[in-house]
Length: 259
Image (cartoon, rainbow, N blue to C red; front, side):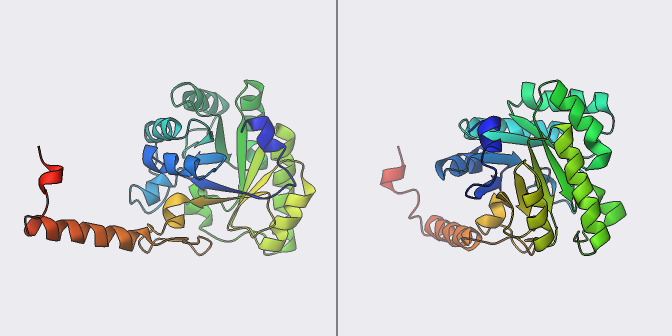
C-alpha cells in the first residue's frame, strides 16, 4: 500500500484500519492484512492512562511510531501530530519532518479544517503527505468537549466547508470523527479523497478502530462507537492466574523450561 494506492481506494470496498502504539500490536495488525496503521495521540489515554490526548508529546509519539514502523514494515504508517506540535507552519514542518525522518512514517495526521488549510498546503508542498481530521477533535476538548458534530444543518454545512478546504489544500484522506452517520455519508460522497470514519457511521471509505478496543483490552474505557471483537483482557487475567498457580505449586518452571 502506498499513499497513491490508498487514495485510489476511494469508493471501493471499505477498509478496516487500526490505531496501534507498539511493535507487538503492529505486527499483529500487519499479519491480519491491515493496510494502514495510525500511531494515534490516543496513546495518551489508551496506553498511558491520561484523561485526554493533550499530554502526548512529540518525543512520545516518535518513540511509539518507531516501534510501530518496525512491527509493520509493509503497512502505511501515519503519525498523529500531538497537541501544539503544528501551531505554526514552521513548527508543523519541523515536527512532521521528524515523523518521516526519525520514525519512518509515511504520512502525518493533523486535526482541523479550514483553520489548518495553510498548514496542510505547506506540508504537502514539502513532500509530506497529510491526513486531515475534522468533526470531533479531541485536542480541542477543553474548548469544545466531546460533542457529536453535524446535528444541525448549520454544523453540517460547516463540516462540508472544512472538508472542501482540506481536500483543496492537498490532504490525501480525511478522518471524520464523531459525526452524525447520514451527514458523514453525504460528506464522503461529496469529496474525491477517502474518508475514514471514527464514530461516523458506515458510509465512509474506511474505518479506524483502536486495536486495544477491538481486542477487548479497553478495561471499561471504551467509547460508544468502538466494538470489541474479542475479550483478551479476561483471557489475559485467566492466563496470569494460571501462571501464578503453577508457580505457587512449583509446577513452573518444569524440566522443559529449565536448563
